[in-house]
Image 1: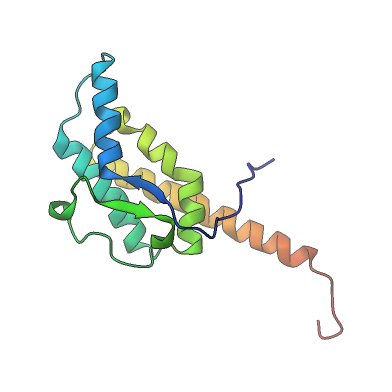
Image 2: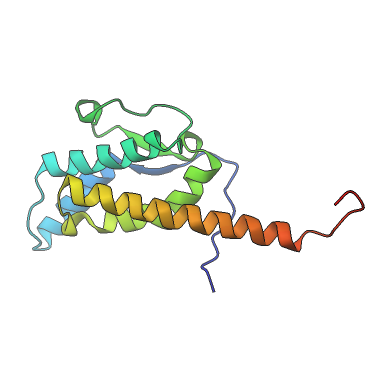
Length: 140
């Protein structure tokens, strides 16, 4: 059975920001994990934002390139379309969790594309299921 996610809250909130990514890396490094260079963290954060923006999952341009990524760069609920919010519910934490498994830009781009294909397939089947469950009317 597919995982159920809570409904999208009406109130705006921050899903992630670059400062949190830096903090996660620092905490891990202090615990004995290897260092992840800031350039890698910046690329990953930008790669994630760019992917969301390029696939129409955001309501605005959050950044136009990696040079615009700074600790204050954030992704909020209001920055995402409904589809974008659902995508982040399913894959946002998985993306952050891959920080130490980063395989480089090309490999990570393929992973995002794979996740997006899974997501769109899941959304299509969910929409078809809802349509099939709808009561028939005389106009059908």
